[in-house]
Image 1 (spheres, rainbow, N blue to C red):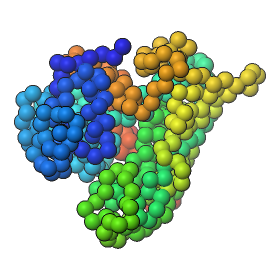
Image 2 (cartoon, rainbow, N blue to C red):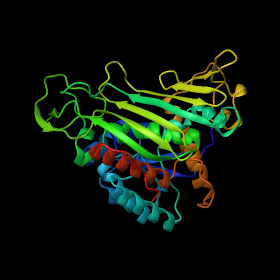
Image 3 (tube, rainbow, N blue to C red):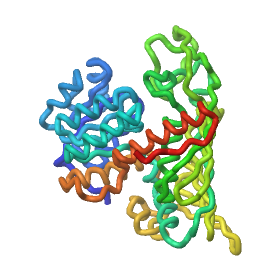
Image 4 (cartoon, helix red, strand yellow):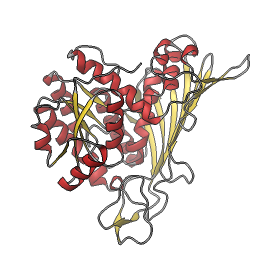
Length: 387
């Protein structure tokens, strides 16, 4: 049974693909969603009307001055995350920010410091942790079931930027950051695997690839996961961010790994996969079949666990709201993460251990991205600093 928080009121910044996903998940948690802010007053009004919200804010200042709002969800383009989060904390609002937490580690480090000084509850939306069978994989790694993990491999691949005519604000470094495929989807994989292993990446060796150094930008821009019909006026833009890449990984425990990412893999709409080789068993999971967890054995038959709370660890079963055979997917991961986050907000206790991704997790991912970029540029292994 999902916890309900009608006494807490939220507002969402961002009206693109992910903002409405936040609104839906918040409602499923029983959180009151008061309003939404877009990139213009007109977009705010349109989104508020479409989502049935009371307020379409004209500015971030108007949103933050709304005394009814307790929590702000930041789902705007990456370049706005630092400033909007800083303003929200200064206004005394709890913050849940989409990844990346900021564009640079200096910015994300500042946000960690401000959050800890404020006493407010803050988190980053690494939602993929919250698939029930990802939680099950983590529980097995924390028990003796898997044993020492030798190595892990995986990928996160999509095709929505396959064509030169495919455009989104993320392809431009000034809007999305110097990294794109790694920062946009690779960080989800990296957060997930570090969570499952209970281990941190300490060194990386990366090779990145820009397939389309020039793209056709629709005049007026384009929404995420939308595609040009070919009848829209365009202008050429230079692209320096990567379309694909591979990263060798070393973990603190000695585990080795490799990650491949791509946003130009035809036919793969949104596919995250991992396979880890443990001392006693292997585990594999695929986001296109999220209700199945494969386990490989040496001396017995391999098995596939279908998501069923009665067959899972207590931690994983707590993330499965529906009985076995009733699938749970992408929207449910937001609900589960928000449920964790709002339980701490409701308790009004910032010292309570967080079970959700925190600003420190978000900062660590930004530091990791900077190490990956430096590795690619220098064509060598680079240590990931802990600062």
